[in-house]
Length: 286
Image (tube, rainbow, N blue to C red; front, side):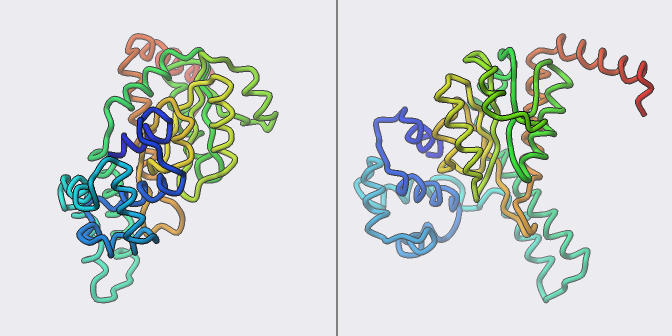
């Protein structure tokens, strides 16, 4: 169903939903496996809308009413991906013990759960499409701000190990417009953001797509504004007790992408890594 929402956002589906309806559907999909799905009342309260709105949404998706929509949502396991780790984290905090180890255990278990969700919701077609775009593009640019600047830098570093012409967009503050103008429709832009989404990143994705660039979006939900303008989209979860958005699953996804690219062009990757190692030795880099 998440793939359907992506297709709707791109205009690739015969189903049309407004932005509010797409947002509501995205919120509902994030609740898959939750007990809130057992009642239209609890579900509507969880996503901040009315039962009648959810019924109309179900009908727009082709269901006769909420019951059919609910059955589709519940067709997956009632155990939320990674719930074992979350239950472990809750158990670790039971009794009000707030020791450093307990807090660390909670956060680590939550991050394990996020990686579990990454695996359970892994879309092979979208991943392989993303790898293919990266491999075949003459140039690749990666863009993210604030926390996602570190993610973009990490992904750029990893991809540079196995292929050439990969760069951070606007790394030297020379201008986003100028750098995008130097790219053409054979090139790829990778953008990354999660809720609350960076408006600037969404705008860069939109304008890049309108200019003909292929856009790979790395985000958290099918209702993300990045999805609308993407050629391919990859998802990672970030919910945790960390004081900001957790980056653990996103970094894991970046590692998967780098490995995926290397596996697709093994000889080129080996040659690039060998050249890199020689240069490190020649430059006496420690």
